[in-house]
Length: 241
View (cartoon, rainbow, N blue to C red):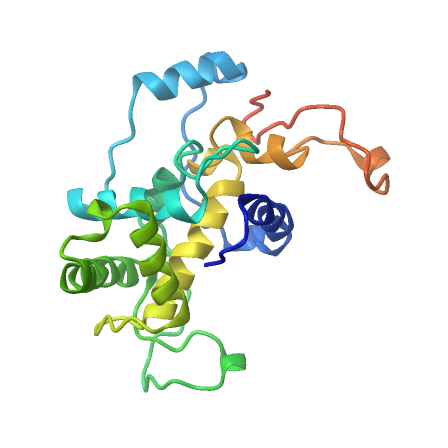
């Protein structure tokens, strides 16, 4: 976590979209398309009328996810935050995919911490990282601050997240840095994904960075550095802003 001003964070968000590989998004089932989704006002009204109910995370875990992503990408004057764009919904829906079950990973032992270039070496799949990690972070917070993570104020939440990122927090069951990395990666993905995956509600992140989305043709604007893209983004389902 950085102590730089929010404007630096927003620059980071704009640049980090380039390092969120499309292939990393699991092929979760798209939300059914309706006529109301053809217009921003209709889509927003539908979302507001039907709050998302998590299928994987329990009540305490859901509070943690909402509180954590809100600090990783908070709302500010420059753009929407993770909660505005439905990032918790994206993460919850990912937990019911082959990705979260590690279905395509080699998961046979021995499990040893190797050199960084060898990549992920833990025996935990994403579902396990979240289930064990959230419980461990809450125990850590209760011991260090007297309350679970979601009950802490924003400044203390930032302190806890910084200790996770640096690996200084002892979580026992899950390496702190690995848990933080999983959470941050999925938060970025949910913030910038196509709305079909449950995040980037109303394509707010795309509008903020001027990304055209799933438009069939925008090559005329590719090498026009510094020139704003003149049209709004389009989602895979054809939703426009």
